[in-house]
Image 1 (cartoon, one colour):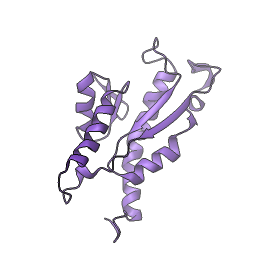
Image 2: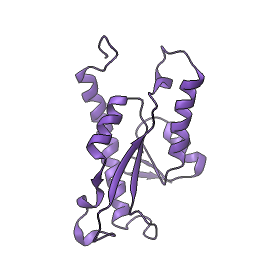
Image 3: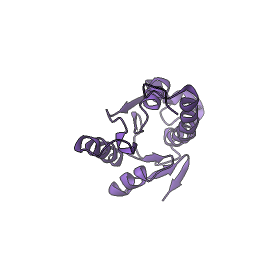
Image 4: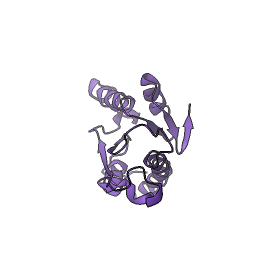
Length: 156
């Protein structure tokens, strides 16, 4: 539920974070498979940028603070690192989308559609797409034939 000013209550935020952490664990596993060279060994993944698309501004900010500007290589054992001697900085970016396209009480508008479309389009431009629940990410990945993962499972 939400409080009087539209801000999610603490139990709601905690529930959202729990669900987001499932997807984030998958993202970290997929990231590690690229950093060890197990997945697509010929491709350069020495720069990592996560594009986070969610209808929750609170979760978006939490992911940026918790996972952004980190050395992704730090979690990979030294002997398994594809980029052994370097720091692989992970940046986390988001759009200004507020997720209003998911709010049934809001009237449809061009601005709301544009926010959703921009997120969907940008997801399709990434190297791979990691989804959690809904088909938003599926169609973004299909548009450009990008690899699609759900948590740590690849959907060919």
